[in-house]
Structures are given as structure tokens and as C-alpha cells.
Image (cartoon, rainbow, N blue to C red; front, side):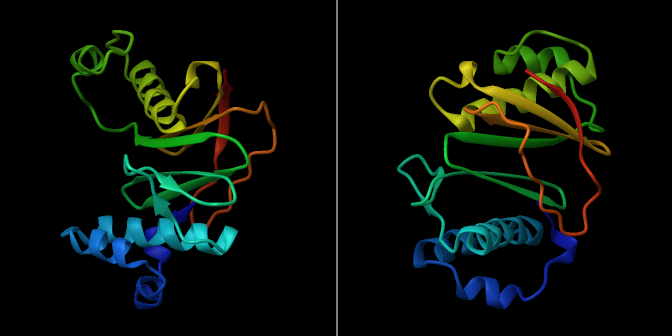
Length: 175
């Protein structure tokens, strides 16, 4: 996980990008989104020594395992595992038409904000996980107004968050 406000050496991060990633980066007009993209690639490179590639669906891939990326506001999360993994983050302070959004996304219908966001991050993490996500284990973490879901094949208590200038995470439940 990284806080984009802590990002430095953007030019150095751009140098490590593949030609495809440079073309993808050029499409972003929003500076925050550019930083999220650069940081996700830099985190993977720092942890694995590998460059992120993308599959035919645009999902990130690495040779040594599985990777999932999530970003919201000033935060970037990267999940790296030896087995399938998915991660998502949402800002729970945003009010929406929870019942309408639930119905639109095919989630259990609810007007309750906490239930909606739990269902939503779970849905997104399962999507990133891929096939058989309903059989995967889900871990939910709170970080201030943010809710994070990690979806993993393996039942584990060894999920490690490497933080750069971000608040601590609290495990709130597991499924």
C-alpha cells in the first residue's frame, strides 16, 4: 500500500515502464490517476523485481505469481500472492443511492451504507480474483473511512501490509 502524497521521483518511475505502459499512462489526464498507475507499477517492481504486464482483458499479471491492484483517492494497494488474489478499496464516506446501486450491480439489495460497501468491495475483489471467487476467503479491513477487501484462495492470517505514510489497517471480519 502506498499513499500517493508520499510519491517521489515520478520521472524515475516512468523510466521503468514498458512501452505499452507509457502509452497507457499518456491516456490519463488526471494527475492523481497517473500517480496511482505509476505507484502500482513501482510497488510490484520493488517487491518482485518484475514489470507488470496485462492480459487480454487488461488485468495485471506477473511471471512469479498473481497480482491485483486497487486504488482510491490517495491510496494504492497491490496484492501479490502465489495463488489467485483480488483486492479492492472504497471510500465509505461517500453517500449514494445504496438500494439503486445494489440493484444495478446485482448485489444484495440494501439501503444500509455499511452493508452496501461490504458487498461492493467484496464484489470487486471477487471479480479481480476471477473464477471460483465464491469459494475464496475474504478479509475485510478498515482504514479510517476506507474499506478494503482481500479475496484469496488460501486461508491465511499472514496478509502483510507494507505501508508508506498511510494509517493502520484493522481487520474487521473474515468470510
